Length: 225
Image (cartoon, rainbow, N blue to C red; front, side, top):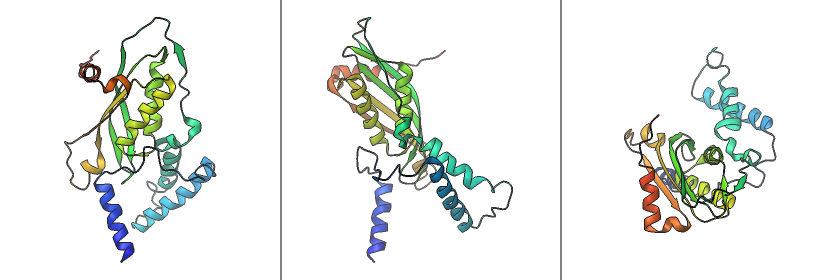
């Protein structure tokens, strides 16, 4: 009975989209195995899942799926778990003395819901006010991509992006808004294909109404080329 109760609690946790920590939950031995060792283990686990579902893995179309999925997990969609892949976000002196807000909007987000391992797809919008240093624009995209490539909840992803840029830029004046669709909502459960989730994290001056409003107005701009 206790096991059944725990299962019910875990199920409700996922359905209610509750996060448990602003840091990605990792065991102390998370990096004891090499990437290739992890792929070998996951490959066998995926094969077991597929066979349990009744699939015929001798079929040419399915035969390579366990290996493909294992490589995808380790090297692609969960590659952001590896600290060695963290982008080196070099900063530069703000020699041109640009003192206004810098906004990078419409950054593509591809992540994975940690409750059902289904995709999260959306856009991130980031802003900061220089404290004497600036960071390359593409590095902002890479920071989003790095933290997105792990099992996530959107709230944690938003916080992690802001914290990382605050550390990189040595300023609290960083903000992030993410608007994304969750396939755990869109393709299963309630199956509401129209809904999306919006999260935000505002630091420093962005907690002030006027600065926050300026940022939100910028990301509404319809940029076309």
